[in-house]
Length: 252
Image (cartoon, rainbow, N blue to C red; front, side):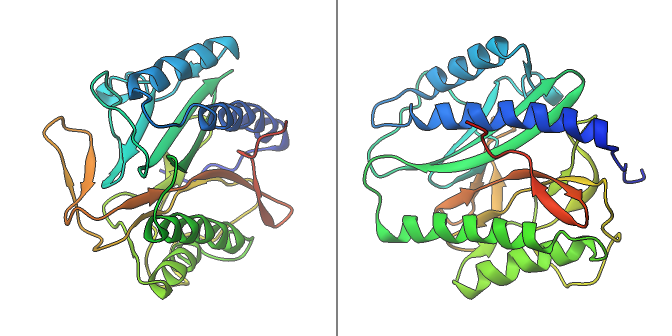
């Protein structure tokens, strides 16, 4: 499948849904505290999507049962929020939100700290966020897709962490997942040439230990194979006038 190039009007519509997505993540940040049940966050996301006249993009996607993916500590991605799952002081929690609004998708993730976290967890979060910014900075017209990947990996490895290999970023817009796939590792100078009008979800998934992961018996939840912590940050960006513009930054 070819990489779709979005026009100015389409990017405006993607920016609209991305603003909703970012604002939902802002509001989730106010909920993150010791003792909150993950199912409450899921219900909160469903309510906010309705309030914004959008739909949770993940709910029912390939059978996923929830409106939001929540990954705690050694969970990497695709965690299912349940009534039996509770956050505790010292946890880190990755929250991934997707929204469908007027025919276009937005996708973004943040990792939050619960109360007081240790220095190792803080470092992992900071480096993962920095790796996302490095990847975005590499998404410029004329570069290739793997230049994004290499920028992420170089940042992470420098600090002794490991990018997940099994799951990747992706194009986004009219569909939740479009071409191209954007790994968080690899040599530079490979893949499609980056052009104006491309829209990406760049999302470093970074482990404190090895890059290896395992899918749990629920068929969704992905954990680190060695039990070490994992962090996840994601922005939807559009390539405009030669550079990547972040669309999932809150406007208020």
